Image 1 (cartoon, rainbow, N blue to C red):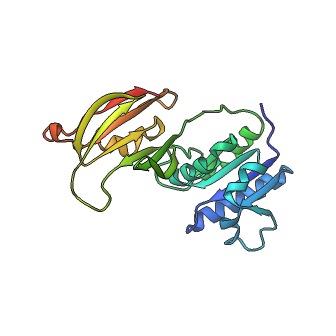
Image 2: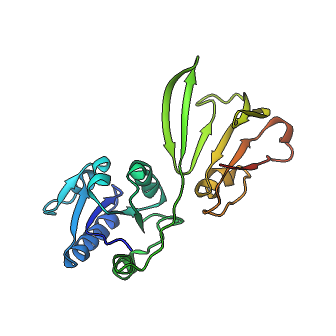
Length: 227
């Protein structure tokens, strides 16, 4: 198992509970003689912390592991920013759901110690890369750990689109939008639109039209496809 010596900390802003947990985590890690680096945004609201700080982007270059204190949204944002560095991300739950941030604050020291001592399993999750093109020119690009959503923005009108997978035509559709989700994201927006729950280790994506015309009375349909 990999030894972790340089630990980054990212915390969700706007919560005194998050700050309390970050302080506890900092104290615990320093007691184990580890090098602790705070993300610069959380460092600004922790006066006198006495630690090295770094931007989120650079944390991936200097850390062996990053610990995120917050909710699932905080962990998703951190994972997206750190994905290309291929370092482990550990979540301590200070949100509401805790699907991904599964360490409770009251067990912080015990569970983090287990990880530092090598008693852990790495669970790999893949990301989606989306690109928006207009007249064959790329005008936007982004990565997503949960899902990519096609929708008409603030307009309430339906949109018409075609779905191709690996260059092969699948179907044409009129709907309010389209959700393309990873197994990680299958329990989020895609689930609320009638999509299936997929095991996190499944190498597949799920495609869920949002209230398509042929299925208006049958809610919606969904399709899973190997990635």
